[in-house]
Length: 322
Ligand SMILES: NC(=O)c1ccc[n+]([C@@H]2O[C@H](COP(=O)([O-])OP(=O)(O)OC[C@H]3O[C@@H](n4cnc5c(N)ncnc54)[C@H](OP(=O)(O)O)[C@@H]3O)[C@@H](O)[C@H]2O)c1
Image 1 (cartoon, rainbow, N blue to C red):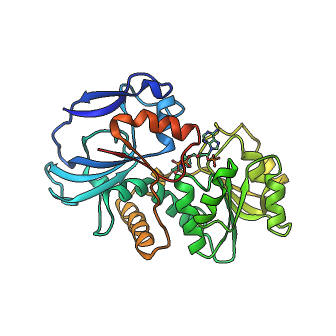
Image 2 (cartoon, rainbow, N blue to C red; image 1 turned 60 degrees about the horizontal axis):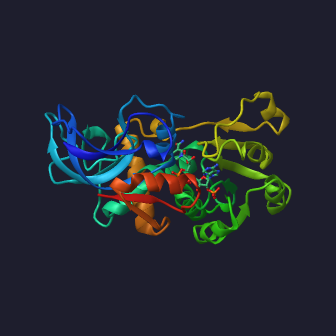
């Protein structure tokens, strides 16, 4: 048995319980990990509330770093004693767990457990958004919403390193300076004049691409921020799901492109996972991306981390310590 944060019903942070759960011995293709640091992501909130339903009871969480304690038959990608991390495997809020070994990435020297737990999911998200969903090129202008957030800080720094002009948006004045320190050339506080501000900053042209994981509250403005044939990458819904809409709108607003990607589909194959993780580690080692962990909570206190994340009180990654 191990300690974990489990839910028996969807709801607010109060449904999160600190409980004992079984840890199965690793079967064929599996590895058991002693976890050392766990990342908190907004998807954990969607899964807790039921916006993305889980089969219950469920241990929350999607990413962590730790040490391999045991491996099942046929496992060759990792060995006992390896330092590893993963992203996108529900059940991460636990001291120990058993996972498919093929989803683990070995951690190189110089990448600590906290950093790995903070960047596996967020960093690989930034990687695929900026390099594969829309390939950001030098001289282009991007808009990134929630620029002071977990994915936002990493992506804005990375986009800057790729040579883009980065317009970040934040929800309050208090986050403006944080976003500026993380790669934004311009920071706009979200409000009714958001699209007009972006047009002004782009000399009336509009942005090449908008990355929007705020969802409902920024949807209209995101479409209005783009140049003709620009791309809206809608990759989350922190303020709620985007409303139903007609594809015709894309034509009216300038023959725009729209995609709604998920990390899972960009790291589904083992070689994609390895390449994405390795690009993230390289970006950290080269200094293109810096991981600034300002929020740490004990695993048992994960409900407080959720409350702070949802209330928009956090900036950058959040890590649970084991
Ligand atoms: N599709 C994918 O592959 C993928 C992968 C990873 C993450 N995501 C998405 O990326 C987004 C960022 O994830 P994260 O874990 O790094 O979270 P985060 O950015 O640290 O936190 C979410 C931020 O969204 C902003 N926000 C705007 N309206 C909000 C509202 N009504 N309630 C709460 N927050 C609101 C807040 O920033 P301000 O206060 O500055 O507005 C808040 O800090 C999430 O939407 C997540 O679902 C998608």
